[in-house]
Image (cartoon, rainbow, N blue to C red; front, side, top):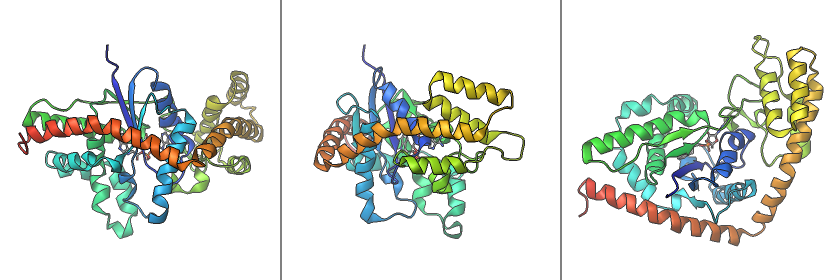
Amino acid sequence: MAKSTILSGIRPTGGLHLGNYLGALQNFVKLQDEYQCFYFIADLHALNESFDPQKKYAQVLDTAATFIAAGIDPKRSTLFVQSHLPEHAQLAVILSNVIPVGYLFRMTQYKEKAGKQAQGNANAGLLYYPVLMAADILLYHPTFVPVGDDQDQHVELARDAAGFFNRRFGETLVFPKTLHTNAPRVMSLLDPNKKMSKTLGGDHCLNLDDPPEEIRRKLSRAVTDTGDGSGAGAKNLISLLAHFADAKTVQRFSEAAAAKTIRYSELKLALTDSINRFLAPLQERKAQLLSHPKKLEEILATGDARAGKVAAKTLSDVLKKVGLCR
Ligand code: TYM
């Protein structure tokens, strides 16, 4: 029986954090065994906020190296770059004609980010972000889209877009479902009622590229008591420990937390150790990959070609359905 398809992407914005890893990338790696996977670097989605064009291409290669260092096997999974396949932008333009603009203004991410852009003067790329994301998804007919929970609303919009398109032009696009890991929302270190996110600032995040000393420094500053009785900071640190430490250590700190005898300085040290132990081999593999940029480009070109075949077939079906070709 043919394997079901998985598709997901990550923006190249200069280094991933542990939220990206636990919410998405670790799941990408696991899913490779069971599914036919398409993973891509969402570079077109990285243009709606301020960025340095001199650095963007290096960030694309850096993200590719992170995917592979984390365990994506480009032989089994198709790893490609969104902007290399014009079908993504073409399908987005077509879908923009079936998606009501009101749906886009309602998106939480748009509302949050638009408020922060130049006195509310948000660019259209930010508003159309979910249209392009719907195109990314629908081109590959995936059964599941593994993402953190901040992307759920966008996957739902992709389902709506498939419905609008199919009702108007006939059955063409499939309805994708969201797939979460057991860490769909990793929280910020300094503001644990918000999700870990680069836009909050560097010390809110633990990055996959952070050297050991930086992990130690950031964790030593992490908030444990938010003063609102929620214990959000402590919970976030204990759940991070559950991902990186051995079962005995996790049990010891969980029991101490329940008995209210926990010493947060010890928890932070244990967490620093376990995260650094996890990151060391990943960083080493990544450095090796980045020292051969030509090889990385070849891997991506092979992925582009594989993904391109699927994308071209879907786009051709769509073009026929809307009457733009025979
Ligand atoms: P991006 O690049 O912002 O984030 C990549 C993935 O990381 C997840 N994530 C988190 N998970 C748990 N806790 C957190 N604190 C956290 N922060 C981020 C995100 O949910 C995401 O899964 N729009 C997407 C990229 C994209 C895409 C797509 C994804 C473009 N087209 C098509 C899937 C399908 C994004 O901005 O991800």
